[in-house]
Image (tube, rainbow, N blue to C red; front, side):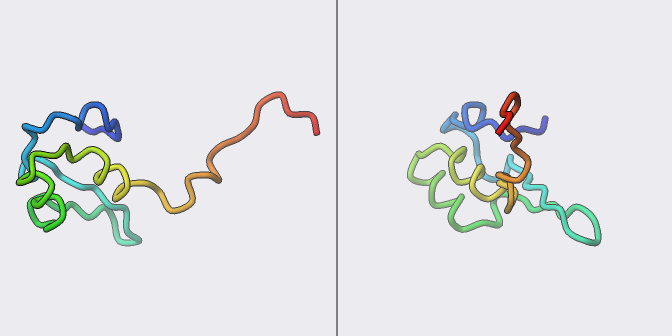
Length: 74
């Protein structure tokens, strides 16, 4: 399953080794196992959910540019 949902990743039972982080690159998609990230390991060890940090890591750099305002005639 692939998700950006912090709610789905809020379960503190999710281990970083169960997470694959997909990062687009010019040469294709890079896949990283969450357990390779010291910060994710520290969160899991502290019993904290991983969702917030994963959302920040996977957020597109210019996501605001994807938004459009519908019905704005100005």
